[in-house]
Image (cartoon, rainbow over all chains, first blue to last red; front, side, top):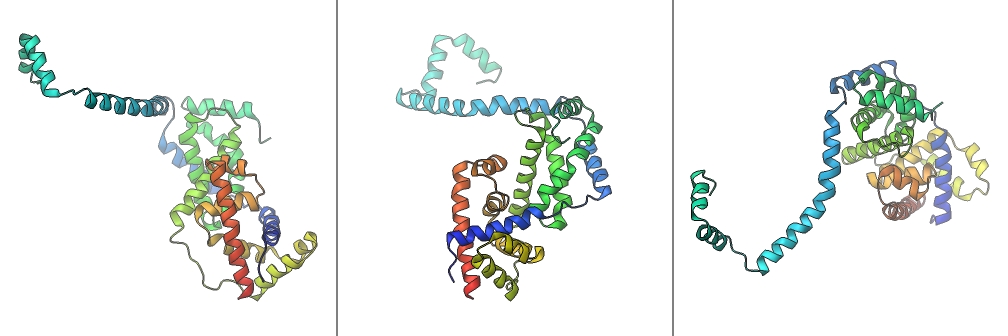
Length: 108
Length: 194
């Protein structure tokens, strides 16, 4: 016997009636003590999770924009013939003293 | 009594200010509600642990509660999603008895299908047989399909309400509800024919 769409909906209705009639269970009295004990070990919420929430709001919101900007800049750099060596050479020629100071700090 | 947003907002404010013990007021007020949700979706032996997880997640997520909906609705979302997480973790290790249904269950199905009056089959069927049929059907679905069937077909929610509770798109919920209905149609047809 093949079950049609109407039949399956009838079956769901019968199941749903029984499903919703089920009594709410009794809560073990020690359960609440156990939960609060667990929550106290987590400590108070003031301040610390606020920073995480703040971070979540700003960092993730701008992550997509930052990724897009990085892709655009990379494409531009590749297309414009940007080269790190030539840029460093240019910096040295334009400002050899400053360049040596940077070297002495082991930045370059 | 349940939906007193001003009282809930005050308690939430105290908890966010660092008063951990104030959370117990919310726990006392909503534990029955959470247990009612959890008990419908997970096995009875796991209800306490799952309900505990719900309140711990609620406590940890309290800074992100923006009062756009009532605390009760927000807590319901956490409860439903925690139940879904339970099935995702336990789906592969669940026990699936090979022949868990008897002639009685096949008769139950045939009675439902052939009966013209819905009221008469509600009187005929026992809670136990119906619950066994529900468990038989749901155990054969993926966690995602299971949650959709429970919320839409058994609890009578709309696709939008189910999607909101689960945090999924309405399209996803509608596709799953269609596919899982087809799957159960086939499964139950085979059961009657066997």
